Amino acid sequence: MSARSRLLFGPVAAVALALGIFLLPRLLPAYDPITQTVSEIGEIGSPARIPFAIMLCCVAGCVLVFASALRSVSTALKRSAAAAYLTGAMAISAAGVGVFAYPHPLHNLFGLSELVGYQAPLVLAVTWRRDKRAAKVVGFSWLMAALVWCAIIANLSTLDREGTLWHREAAFYGVVQRSLFAAWFAWLVGAGLILRGVRNVAGSTSLSG
Image: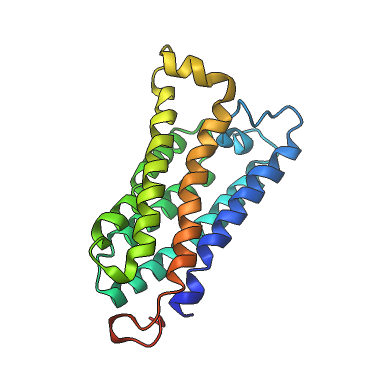
């Protein structure tokens, strides 16, 4: 499969996650997406636990395929593949979150490990910034990296449940958490679509590697 085709797995991953987060709570009549976290959809004892785990593993698989495409593009452009590896790390984190349902101790560990994958937009912007061929994706990545970091800071309120930030966010923390997912997966979609337009890079006629 060509890299251009594999880049489409970024948007597919985003759509799969969005549909899962939207549809699976319908199995939980008392679930409130405004105040409750995404992990609570598939927590231990939830009727949505198995579908939630399957959904996240499918998302992880799509992210991993996208990461392989990003690595191919990096090679073609002769740029650092660090962002591709960080994206692949996100796939591992997402699968772990799905397999080890909340409140399993490993659930939170895999959740925290997502901070590694969240740095992919920033790393791509930094490492590709001097390549004029990648100007569009670099500019987009700078923007999304800023949004991702704003969302990360907002989500840090959970570390201090007695703090002012948490008391301000508690009533809509479900939305705050989803903003982080939305920002990172929006980068996945945008980067994938932008990079599909890259042609004749590094002397190659196509991104077939």
